[in-house]
Image (cartoon, rainbow, N blue to C red; front, top):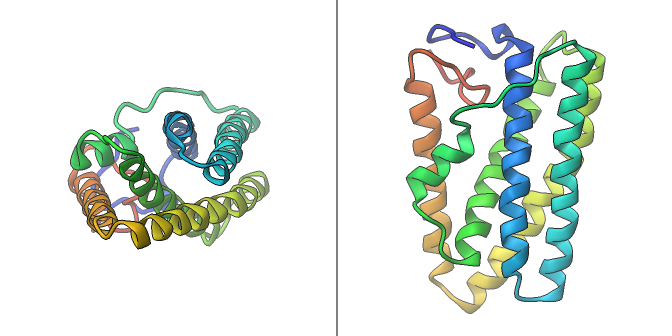
Length: 191
């Protein structure tokens, strides 16, 4: 959907927003699948398996929400996660992937909470947001705990986290500066 700069989140086309969410969950599932192949202990492997299941369910929930409003499903060309990865560079280690996933999941929680706090959110979308937020909050927590555990063993983990946070800030700023499209991630920030 083409919009003008400064559009507020609640002014965005709901079909476009839900497709953004769906794309994020599908992209997340791919990243989690990749991480699960690199998991180096049973606890992390177990958490990643649960997380992978959650991402697939979330993609289905957004697909169902789109169907419920007779919305078209379409591909999102440059989702936030693609831009995040472009600013971070190719993740080469499990720690790189964990840090990128942690900032992406944190951004998702922030976005879903902002959406939930809007007036006039349809009941089916509100239910979907609440259900997904429970899982997303856990995703942020378990990944943060894993990064902290790794950081106690290797002080360089903090620099990877810092790099991921910088990539996040750049991705969001880039989306906010684009004059032809507004992301649900930046609609509130666009002036």
